[in-house]
Length: 289
Ligand code: NAD
Image (cartoon, rainbow, N blue to C red; front, side, top):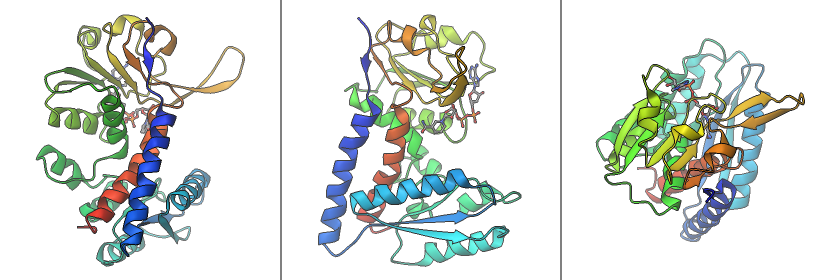
């Protein structure tokens, strides 16, 4: 029987409705929800502008006040840091993010580390991943939250299950592995250097692919009935010369063996976008503390 589809678009829409309700409740209580985003122009940031515009529209739809703080082309690390510090110390601000990429020469890790952990809605301050490790209140990285959200949508109890992450980047693979560990799954984190990787993946109850390698996960990598979450977003050109987006999972063949599978596009991507706003609400409900 082919795998059941984990529809990211439908999950995202359902989550958006819940977010709008939560934002409405806070607004009625005199605590309007807002998201403050910093955009430091680097000169070639059409993609960040599109992202910021989409974010503004989605926030407007959900009753979240979106404030974009733009810094001009040529701005330096110190100016970006000052802007972040201003937002950190403003009691009316409870959710802060900094659009990537930053201008050439500005250290993204340094800037992200400055965002107050309790306002860091992208979960990029290293303090937040530390808080996850120690089981403290944390704003987790959005892609990792989306992966967990999709696993939860299957109804699986993760405790004691065997989970394999293919890919161990700081931004996706490692946070996913840590969050699965918090749920008391048995977690194996693989990289391109892992030997005999299929011996591990074939045992997985939950297989998360975040390698950035199109079609890497083949049918014979996957245990029958496994939950397969595909984080990969890869642009490939087909034999017909057309460019399309594919994941790290060879979808058509893996769906024949998996129990659940996420499509690309329309899987983890749309849920990730919404998890950022879920973090905004979580932060607003705590009052940014
Ligand atoms: P990265 O390049 O920083 O890290 C890739 C990781 O995969 C590394 O740990 C590497 O060792 C491992 N890897 C690469 N090839 C492998 C192989 N053949 N076998 C085993 N491991 C292998 O990538 P990233 O930033 O983590 O992104 C991974 C993918 O996820 C990309 O396609 C990216 O576009 C996508 N992504 C999606 C979302 C989303 O919201 N859906 C968010 C971020 C990234």
